[in-house]
Length: 237
Image 1 (tube, rainbow, N blue to C red):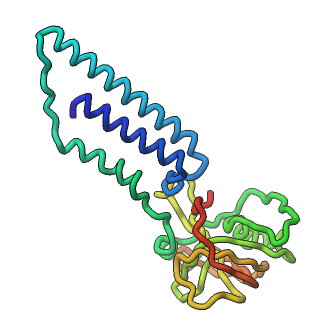
Image 2 (image 1 turned 45 degrees about the vertical axis):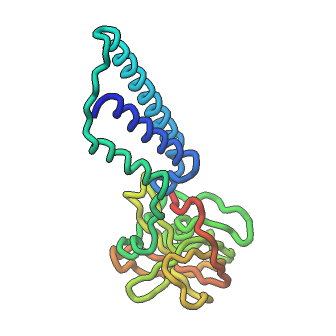
Image 3 (image 1 turned 120 degrees about the vertical axis):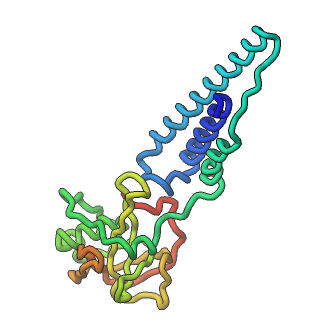
């Protein structure tokens, strides 16, 4: 690959990263807090591409000045295959991980260091991770008597138990792990995996063990539910 091709490919990669960062497509790959770093990376790549192309242009002009004609640059056409993932990123971002992954991975629920005070909102919207941690490790002290609203997608355990699930990220989609909350109470019939729903319910001390890793899966007693579109940010941090 000659320097001109290197510059073009680098510029395309930088442009694709910038596009993903500014259009929220990056949320399919990494957690939301990494957006500033992605933008900085994209700018560095674009500047590097511009400098590379400028230096190559000056080099070719110098060659023409020295011997009166330019020198052709041979390059492997295979090098342009490096551009294929760039177009894939821009044209067809992969879907967020869902029930298939959740059904093959144990819950990632771990006991937090502490619990923040909850507002008096009724019903109280909460991340699935926050509800699960309070229900499993704080024995629902801050949840008892409250109406809770959770949003997630449907997955199922090996025995057919329906779970409201969210995938959590430490860094990127490669390390995504599920957080599962069992659903009891009033549920719509024939809930399909990967269906996104919003449930309103109350805390229960019912607990199950994950079929895969034995981790705790708390439950919520559903009193109302409705299907909702998948959120732009499908992962929880």
